[in-house]
Image (cartoon, rainbow over all chains, first blue to last red; front, top):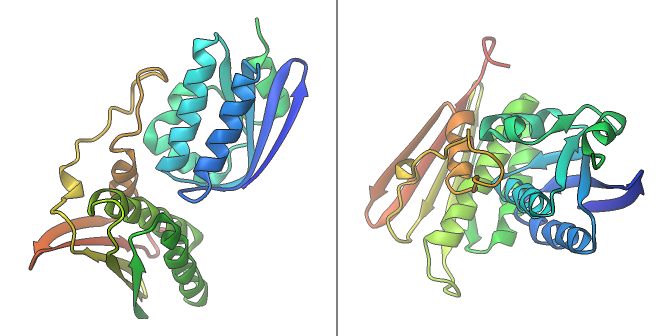
Length: 113
Length: 140
């Protein structure tokens, strides 16, 4: 699991690459919680290089989104690939997480109002 | 192709079974969607067994039999842990908002949705879970 962080127009963009599965979730969760506790409140998760997510990975998305919500921020997902989309759709996450095709569109949704 | 892999009850072992399946699937030229569904099902169901079937810090083994046929993949997971029928787990409410959502039951919900058939039986003190995915001209 590769995690890259960049701040664009006040929004923390985190790119996750590889697989978010039982063996990588602990590390991914620790990194995201660190970033949020470090002050981020609007966050974009860029998933264009994420090829796989399981329910363990969904849990991490939920933990991050809940933490951001309590700070009146939010988590926007973008660049979702085929198999990740399938899992997000079946779990109902596609309906509750704001999603965008790419980072530019995601920034419009994530920017603090 | 039929192959049985015996793994320890350790989450790190899941990747080994997935890798073995993926190389057999590549050889058999299975459709990508089928491969993804089985890889996910292996993680979800094995993680369940590893986390719930045995007391922590007790070493046990789990047998996974992978069968690849022309239009069907079958995965059989056998463990000697506490009786546990994953089909009894209530379906999660997938319509709840972010703050109300939990991921309890989500793994099994994913597997039930993505497999053609999921069966459980208790057999001679062991849990036997069979996952089946069929495919063909009408599928992928």
